[in-house]
Figure 1: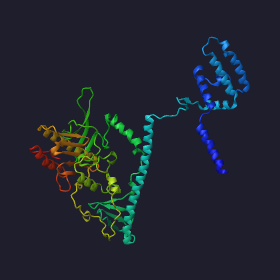
Figure 2: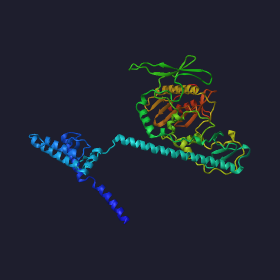
Figure 3: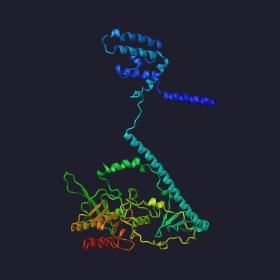
Figure 4: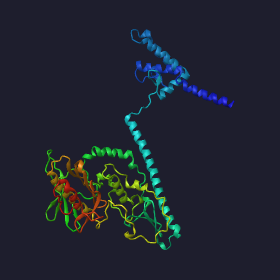
Length: 523
């Protein structure tokens, strides 16, 4: 019995849905459309009969008698459509006198009438356009992207916490808690990377190839950010590629565009703005020059290119272009695990892909894939590992240099590096003027000097690296190298063998130009 009742209910509901509009509904739809066509838009049954919507049956009857006298065909002879108008009056009155039909009409009057669509009456539904669809996809995609960021950040943080926990467990398991606050070292036999656990605080430090300890801070894992979603990045990208590319922006590295800076030897370099020659439009273009105390103008030549360099790695070395957020001075003792093996990772990318144009993986992502699950359980050394000599030297040649001198102030670094880039550009332009090859060209823009020597000799890329206060060279002959400024010899030096940037360029370019190439001092 219960099943029969349920079946009957579903049958009634299904029949109602299938039936859709009734015959009375179609009659109301046709009459309402006919009234608006012949009497004007917005005409209703009540306005046609000239009664209020709340009129009762008696008021409707009186109104019909009055309107029928006015609209009777005998009184409107010669008027076109008089018979049809009088007939519509009778049908309207009949519907309003029927309580059920009047209720249906009031329902459609309050909620809207469907429109005839060729095969039946249908409501006009919202149809989003192309812009609405694209905006919806962008919002939905950004929400999904943010969710992925949340999951990735959670996984990365958990992975680093597990590595720190395993390192502590290895150190404490063999010593019972590291008494007297001494430090203990554990090593990963697969990669050879070493970690030191502090017995007092329990902090874990990574030991690089030169014996320097770097604090592993899991709180520095990059968390989810709405600013990194497509909803924010796509408009910014469109702006940079269109209007933003024509707007002159200040120096992105944070240094003043004009002012004074002091070099390592105490010489004051004045950076000022002078007015260039007026172009054809009558406007003047400012350019940057450096004036020494002696009155000598350095770097007054007109540069080609656009915005200032934020600090990009040599393109031919296949490395990434560093973003503005990476241009900051890092404290050596407060590095997260995501930054620990940056030098080793860059070196491995250089050795593997050499002069390709593909960008390598970022240091953060590469380090997160670093296997640390096989931490060595051998008895660790009792040394505190405070001297670089205790750290094993790498078994293969590295492409990065050791800091050759004390760090410079940001202003001094930029003054020296810009002077070097200007000197190199001038010398190379003079060399290219003596050649007839169309494949050879030199360009210095945004802190990056590109020397194209054709398919046979390849391309040299020299660029500034403000975060490391270095100049990086990508050579098709000797590969990538990093050069530090040596204040004693006043030159850029490769820390691994002590060779200078000037010496390497002269050695490699002499055979190409078939003449003696000599760069200025300070290169």
